[in-house]
Image 1 (cartoon, rainbow, N blue to C red):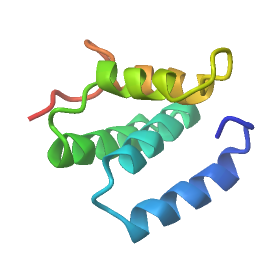
Image 2 (cartoon, rainbow, N blue to C red):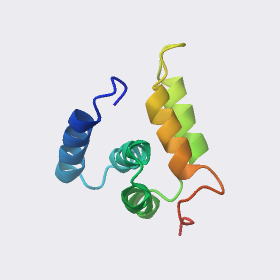
Image 3 (cartoon, rainbow, N blue to C red):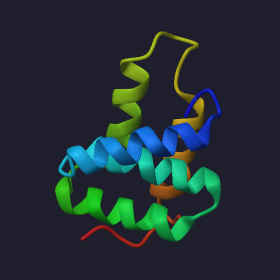
Length: 97
């Protein structure tokens, strides 16, 4: 995703979620990638699945994990931007249940 090859990213991430459908970060990453592609309906579907699997996992917690596990200056910028599009308060995503 960070290299800008969205087609390859969709393939790898879709396969990952297919093999492990209960992995919250897989759904979060696919939501972010769909948001970059402008497909907010698909982004919202993955966001809803994330909310079902891990209702405690919000944007702040995802950002802490991503930034905390990245070397300074090498944060996954496209992933962060996509997550913000989907999960920011007041964003297009429907409210978590």
